[in-house]
Image (cartoon, rainbow, N blue to C red; front, side, top):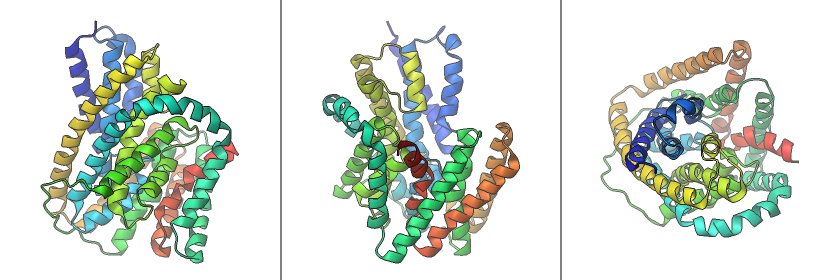
Length: 413
């Protein structure tokens, strides 16, 4: 019999670790998961497999919500939060940083609630839908990519620039993902350059200042926010059972469902956060539905819980709600604290320091992974240059997601 105290303790420990991995740039939840899984023989002497699975799941959900804070405030993205940088920075520069934090917090909790409430529907429709759509994954990716390039632009010149950016980023992604480098260092280098450092450098050129942030003491949930949660939840479901769909495709799809326009930043931030957290739970759901673990944490849990049953799914759903609700409060409190202290700093100086810090992280992780430093630096500089283009030609940075979409297209077509 699993001790309830052990489950509560491991859930709290998972939330604590998720906060740490979420707010510290460069620390990924899968890294902690790998260390934890490697030590299972020792951990099982004190905790049950269910308790360890609770730890991993609560850490994953908390990380999925908390990682939006460094993405928006300091511009250090990963695959799942890259699109949040531009609208997030925009709201911070408009003095709406606290509102942005609350939008992501609501979206994260809403995404989990949407996924849990949708479990009966998913149990019925997803297994047959998965089998039906499996042969057409490449075609679906291609259609979605063309549609988004056309729909997110207003004239032929913008469409042409978007297509060029999409193809160039895709070529870069194909090169980076086909090297013997660790995916961790490849994605850190590429996404930091495309979305993080390029945005910071552009803000330096514009002489941006960090204004006083408006106090926000309430959370308003209107139809726009609900639409964002719905868009993120639906996109999270697609990520869960369609092979080849990752956070890149899901982020763009969530953007389109929630509004499809960078001007609708509230929809976008809410939907991306809902996508991130719902994907964490849906990755577990697919273990039971189609026997396919969709994330690193889900793989570890599937190996820890050998016979994953419906009872496990229900139990982990309640764990997800508890983790998301706790993370909701922590996200607002920690986000407000950081926002209050950042507004008294010289924003240009902070941006320069962050560029140096992110570059330092890229170099350090390259050395740890024994990656060729000259190649990493070349790719890093190239990704920064490519990430600056959308700013100057006036198109959405979401087209840079070709870095992952085109390699997937190459495989499935």
